[in-house]
Amino acid sequence: MRTTTGMLVTLGLLLAGTGTTAVAAVKDSAKDGFTIENERVVPVDAATAWRALVEDVDRWWPKDHTWWGAASTLSIQARAGGCFCEVAGAQQAQHLTVTFVDPNKTLRMIGGLGPLQGMGVSGALEFRLAAAEAGGTRITLYYRAGGYSSDDLSKIAPVVDRVQGLQLEGLAAYLRQRAAPAGRPR
Image (cartoon, rainbow, N blue to C red; front, side, top):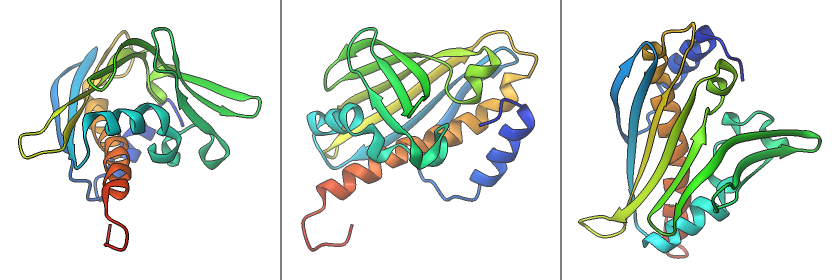
């Protein structure tokens, strides 16, 4: 991953045609920060969604949104002070630090994801799980990031929103696949 605005804009243009259907929004943005929110409803209960979120992150997080791709392993230690980490042998990255755990409801982590980390930008990322009106679980990925940057973060916000939509879609697709009865199309 690169840390330049140009790379982020290029990535955003490439992702614009991916067809992700996550309910997404840049809630607000300014030169020094932004808030984004993505949602998905999945056909499983909150406990199942929670286990997949924290125990199976390496199975659903898109490998093209990691530092070392298929060579790396992702993990989340769901405890205060825990690490959302990536390890590829001697190469290691701490993506975020866990700050709040309410099992089956909320996982909050702080830090800068991807290129934001190298830019010195930090944020609070939350996965919120709640019962959906029509059944299943609504998963909301909420990220508020900010800090000094020579780049205008309001221009980066739509790209981060699309990338996080892809990440949340990875979790949703994984859960839909696990929920599909054997022998039925997934």
